[in-house]
Image 1 (cartoon, rainbow, N blue to C red):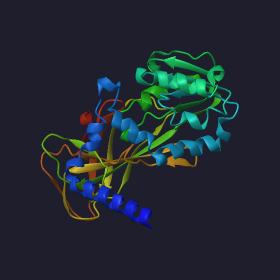
Image 2 (image 1 turned 30 degrees about the vertical axis):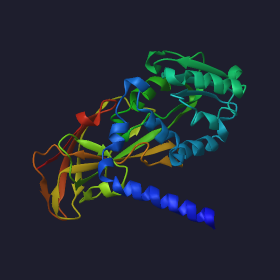
Image 3 (image 1 turned 135 degrees about the horizontal axis):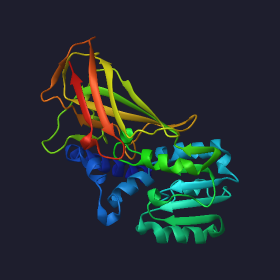
Image 4 (image 1 turned 90 degrees about the horizontal axis):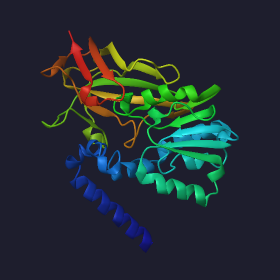
Length: 307
């Protein structure tokens, strides 16, 4: 009983500290995801956020299980990092080509392979995946968790476009499909930021429209890097709007899905390009002009309601 009381007290203290800092944490995920040359990518805390996200990892584990844990397969994983995904299949596959560009994890990878006696089945390729033209052989699976909402910031699309040529005739990409959705709403921004990924629902915008599909990214066939579309949204409430809410649904494999958490593919709030808040009327339809390019930044994306 005493240990339970201590545990409860610790939880309450943690919650109290979090509550005191909600407002200051509004842009915390954005700051954690800002490129940091010292850590060869993102600040260390962001890797910790991702590595401890069980839901994120489980969607890939489900895909591995669907394909019999990749047993007796030849696999290529792009960006293996600290083996958050690799640990779940490496004992079962026949051979793996692990591509990693971050020198900070090279020693970890070598030690991990040595401790598990995996050296004979693994080829570690250090460097930029885009500079690797061919692998020594065709592979059954290409795995790469290089995603960001709408694939705007991260390099999932160009990297898989480059790497899918390594697949054998019946090979699989993991993930294989991404659907991007959008809604229009209202929130407040400070003067410095155009967008922010959501960590807490109290920073969720007031949403005034239905959710609509923007585009589908088939990673087996996608070719164009820029999306330029106009979609129709219907207002379900009347009021002013100044932002959009972006959300991506990921099909890692058929039946194995991931729809975003605070560590990956976060729901993201972005300012509309309209100079002043736009007034919507309930039940009316509006056109939303959207333009963004994969592997750039949300800062360069454009979202505008047009008359």
